Image (cartoon, rainbow, N blue to C red; front, side):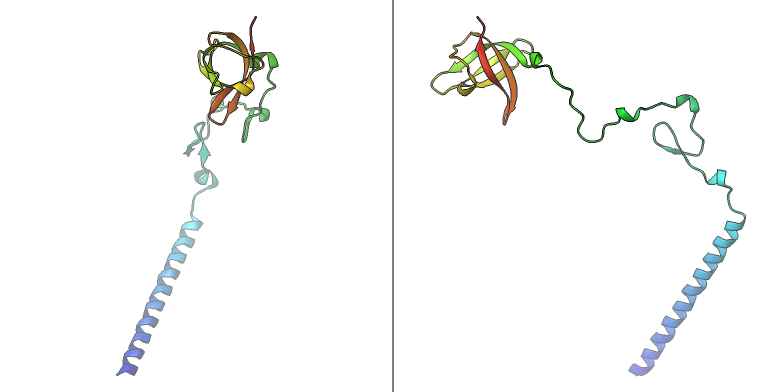
Length: 151
């Protein structure tokens, strides 16, 4: 009984394979027939418009933009050299704790509070002193360095 069932499965598999081959040949013949009277090159052409979308119409030459190769930046933008005079800022010490060795300076230009550590001072300071300083980015944000009292 197992032998007859096995031969029946073999026959079914063979029928399925032949059916699949026939369907494949029909599809192939159908593609060949369509290919002969197919589309022209202009019908198959696709264009990209000024917004980057694919369209079937050619782009309008009046909307063409000229882009300089030098203006294209890939990755991190190039930094322009900074004038050292722009780095020096003025401000007022709003809080300074001598015991703990830190405080804050209110920047006159941006009105932001900038952290200052006692190691960044060039001379001893007190609250409400007018100072000049440079800003550097520390691990927790901007911090003042090279702090001097304005005389």
